[in-house]
Amino acid sequence: MKYFSLFCLVLLFGLQACVKTEFDAPPVSESCTKSATISIADLKASHSLGQEELIAAGTVITGVVAADDASGNFYRNIILQDETAGIEIRFNVTDLYNEFPVGRRLTITCDSLILSDYNGVTQVGEIQEAMISTRICKGEQGLVVEPITVTMDQLDASYISRLIKLEGVEFAGGSAGVNYADAVNLYSVNHVLEECGTENEMLVRSSGFATFASAKTPVGSGSIVAIYSVFGSDQQLYIRDLNDVDMEMDRCDGTGGTGLTSLNEDFQSGADNEDIALEGWSNIAVKGTRLWRGKEFSGNIYAQATAYNDTSPEMETWLITPALDLSVEKTLNFQSALAFWTHDGLSVWISTDFTGFNFASATWTELNCTVAGQSDANYDYVDSGLIDLSAYSGTAYIGFKHIGNPTDGTTSYIIDDVVVEDK
Image 1 (tube, rainbow, N blue to C red):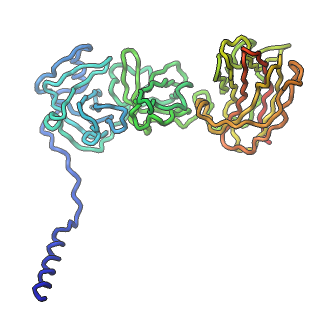
Image 2 (image 1 turned 180 degrees about the horizontal axis):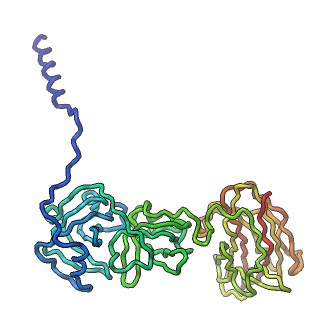
């Protein structure tokens, strides 16, 4: 028993000796014995577009990773940037961010690597996996790559593969409130980015493999940080992740914020026989080609929808108000009329998750109101009555929906004097 106790005591001390009392220190950066022999700008300047050139012996560049493949929007490449320029470094491996994350300094020995370009973007590589340990020295991490704030007019070839920032921009109407890319079919998608106060625009390209592919583009305005690129004559931006996009302000035209506190639209600013294009309003053809149009009679202009002369078998068109602020209880009132009744084709809807651009995915609820019907004479206005909107809150949109069938005959519908005011 005495020997057993002694054995247990020795074993206990042995086990304690095996227990770590301190955490491992984080790995230190490698000591890079080489320094840059050429700036990235000078290396790029030595390249002739359209050619493939072996990089001369003794060529070494150094810089900080400005973009990696962590989000999937960059594939098998990183963007390396020094104080003079940025350049794309291509690899034959993935998950580069594990070793080469944004903010890490790298020193790359470029001897005998290929200097080439793809549709105007200069590239170094491809670096094979077996080369990485001998070609690339990993330096300190956590460095901040500050984007260069520019305007679209200032962007030229010298900014290609650099991290830039554009302020006062928004996604164009058809590119706002939609998926960044096709995450189902894994297709890349281009969206149009507009600069407020100018007619300048360029593309924001996102990969279907990106982690944010199914996220919605913002509907407001603000700033975007991205790697500037080109594809031939097209100017393109590649964001690294959604943190690069900050567009929480109203759109450039002042809409898209909390919404209007009141509305009084008589359509008098429109024109006869022209599709309605009032600021803040959406005019959408869901089926067929006909939109709501301005029509004039005896000096009064109103909004009219009809399937007459439409060549499609079905017609559905929506006229949607600007955003309305329902933080205070509101009522809706409008006038409607019809001509040549064949069917009841007008209904009124409300949505609190429509953004001005996501019509197909928004939730629409039909409102109970009075509209012109079969028993009403042609062009006689019918009052909708006061429609109580107090059941709804936040930001809302009112949609006037017209359906028609040009083959079997169709009713023309008119709306006018749309008023939203405090209850």
